[in-house]
Length: 167
Length: 180
Image (cartoon, rainbow over all chains, first blue to last red; front, side, top):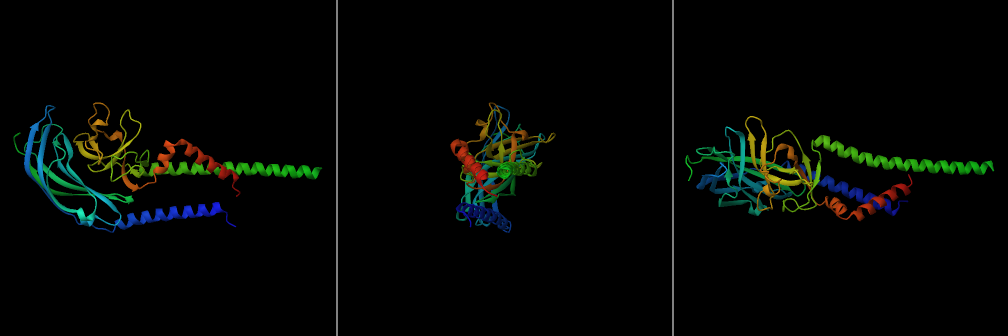
């Protein structure tokens, strides 16, 4: 005969295995979703462009951003974290990525939108190399699952040139 | 009399054998847990392959009690990754998102700035006094997988040690008293 303890043990083991298998399956099925993101971003206005007392260039911009992230959502998606970075190269740094704006998209219904926003974080360089610099605007998204694997991807949207003089 | 002595002897040896088996099986459990942990460390390349989220600074993505699987590869750190880092003078590692990256042209060293999704400002206030950037050596790993709620077990056990001792006691008792 099986004792009570053995029954409880078997039940617990089985349910944990089942949950683990379902979590793996959820992540596995996410791999079949091939999203197509459409997005657009442009700089409308340079609000401020100056050299800080520390010697670093600081820029504040106003952006026009629109995107359709609906195809990123699957049944295993908790939220999508989306953000826009300014990326450029200087003689000192081969990679500069600076987040300008970010947003949490909680569900599919709110995944298609258009906003006009000032930069949430200022663009601050390590040094003073920003005058006349070409900046790439890149949209990144991070799909955060209910359980399992997290998915990251990005898309270059547009480029613009900063003014040649401080404001 | 010889017959009785033989019987006592056989019972005694049986018990010793039983106790030895129990000790070995207990040892096997402990060592296999250690093997799994160390194996994960090798595979993920991170000194702690699994971390428990302790604060609400990444809500609503990660809540307190969720666990994250870490991976540490040679790949460069890039904006948007969720990294686990240690700050000098702080015991507990922090899980936050990278919002700025500057990578040196000549040496390839990186300066990284992080922020919790749910926090208002960046993490400069959390860093050591006067520290502006995180470097590569501060970072223990980047989060690649997520499992909700499971971490509550360890949170409860570290905050209420009595429950931990009760659990260990009960498990030990079970192992010792179980037959075969």
